[in-house]
Length: 255
Image (tube, rainbow, N blue to C red; front, side, top):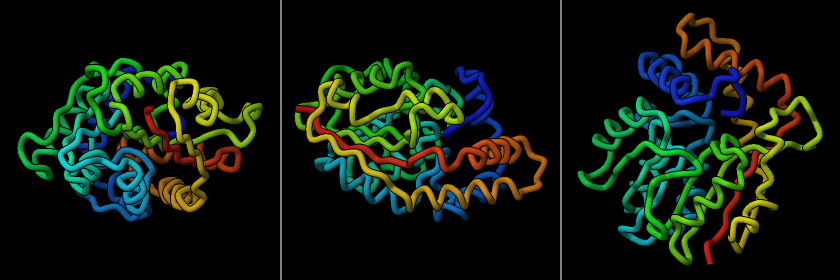
């Protein structure tokens, strides 16, 4: 999600995902406010309706391969692959998240339709030109710099393949209330620089309203569980600077 403690290495995320798996209450807050089914096992702030848009914009061929880059527990990519009749490759640097993703895919996708591997936003480990589509949900800001992740996406996409990214951008890039990693995101600038065409970046205020409802519910929760506490802390930080961010979706094509 958008903000958090300064330690953002794999060990931090391993513990974060382990806490989530042990806490149904945390997932219940997210599911209720974002309109998501609990079995999705989400880790970010996309609504159910947003997945319709991602699936449509990827334009995946039947049986094509979609890469979910920074997949976390895999729920969003699994749902997109299910809807599109596609194969799924999930990449994340948290081994704990990938264990959970494999278990969820085993319940929701036919055998052999999904594979998960340890990798990063800038080094997925996939061959050149192997993916028909790439999705990256609320994670591109963790690449340093974000354009390096977009170049990796371009490398793994086949010609004509599509990328769909969701993230936040600063309403004012000079606003120091916004985390530096978010201020570094400029998808209109960086997608063409990474070699993409047909670039479109649009605000999604409806997604942002749903996200506010999530943060408000998280702040109001008094559950002492560590996963709920982490969500509550993130909610407080996010609400303090809520008006400083724009919620965006970006789509582009690899020529």
